[in-house]
Length: 579
Image 1 (tube, rainbow, N blue to C red):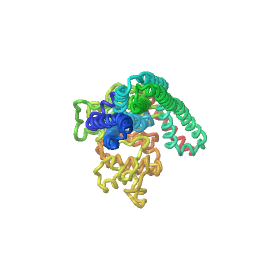
Image 2 (cartoon, rainbow, N blue to C red; image 1 turned 45 degrees about the vertical axis):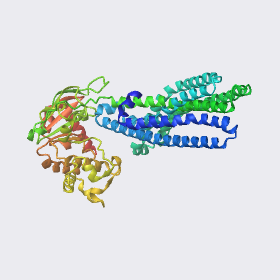
Image 3 (cartoon, rainbow, N blue to C red; image 1 turned 30 degrees about the vertical axis):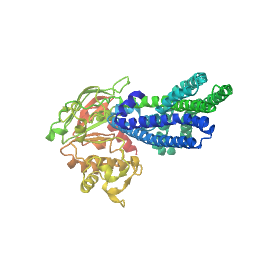
């Protein structure tokens, strides 16, 4: 997964990566020559008191050091450019992919984990790319080059390399092996914390209303403690690496000085060569230490890459046909027809809708009513293809919605969901979601229809009045009316109102429905409602019971022929009389 992800998104940064490789190669080779030159000064210049030789070689060492530093700085710059660009591209691709998901995929993943994957997971892989650009080239070259240069100085101490390097590598890999499964748990714990936090922030009013702050605090503390405990377990393993490396490094240094001193005393080795060998050994072990940082990051980045790839490789259930069929033009563009539609959620034991037939004609209002859980919202969601029907066909404009381009389908639909959502911005910016090029006059006209012009004009800024995320600075009725205005400003061929009048009082409800009539005269209107008073004047009322259509007709016809409808009417009439 990790290699696949890197290969997919780093292809456009080949020049930067090539520059990193060349610059790191130059810097590493330059660094490998410094201990050898230092040994020459000790063995030749100092012993022979040749000041000119010392200055000449010292100037060469200074020049090499400048080249090494310049190459390292440039390599880090190009590496950072590639890593940051990689992160930007992956996040953009994730965002675009999630934007194609239907409600089915959104339910499968959930918002908290998608947020984590687009932020924390991308950051983990991005960090790996950045460190790879600075360490991946340097470490192996430094290690191999250091071994070659150390053997060039003295072969007799080479057995120390054969002992210290494998011991260090094996010890680090044993620790990392235990860390790999914990990183998967870490990412899952982060998802859990994000999920709980998101729920608490979204439902803070409910929490306070029912005095559930202590319970929610305990719930967050439990999720937070699980993450903390897992991170501590990872940290305990991670901190073992440094003492292991330092132990091997210090023992190797003592061994080189001990056995090298014996060889110097026996005249088999010069002091400068011993110093150079020690420096090369330190370079080798430092390269291994640098590689351990990569090894630590790779498991977590691999887990993160798997989670990212899972999203990128998910095929949306709602797809664009290869050869889209345009809907009919003219008045028939707003005709909505459902033919023997059955829908079942993934993993559900029974379908939510069974063999539903429905016809909504332009210029008419079709109402859907039924008990809680009868499938009203699900039925409405099939029209704009938030889901695809399990069987049967859903037609808009005389063409199956699965044969139409989603953008063309959505452009003809004005959808007001059961829970109206407003975005951070202003009243105008939210209304222009329906029609980006709408004029202020069009916005005010839509607000008049939605009975929202009064409270909008009462604000000092009018159309520029600020809206917080989710419209939390407005009441439920105000949010519903702005959502209705957002649909009205589009002037679509099909209006879908999913219980969109529930937060309105009866007077406002009546005025709004009266104002909608001339606006929707040439459009099909499908209304899901709980209140009979909202739909009593509809030309066609569809009664759902357990996902099955048990009655179709006008209000008067259903009172005579549909027992389920009479029960709904009687219950609301009794409740109204009692109040």
